[in-house]
Length: 102
Image (tube, rainbow, N blue to C red; front, side, top):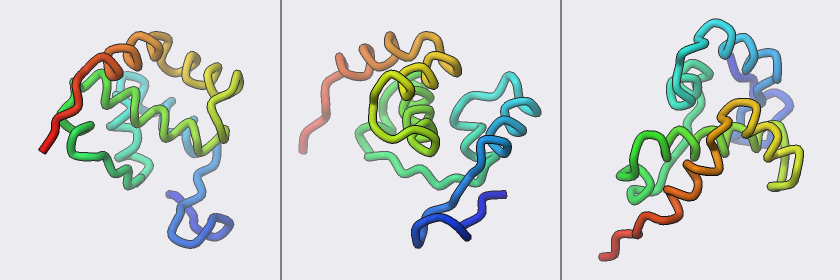
């Protein structure tokens, strides 16, 4: 589904319509499942991969949102809010968890 034709080398370009089509066809899917449906390769730091699933969904939504909106301004936050109304709580939980060392 993703097309690399208009994207930077090595990056897929995914249209809003493609994302919406997957969202409509999988209304109960987690963000991680949606990323798989879109054939996205999202790499997580090993420490992030050990965080609670709700935090992983937030991280993946955050990265997907950057496909539509650069930066972290109002438009970006509105997009997060539209797809995950509790994103601020998930981010707070993620930020409260310790990083593993060594």
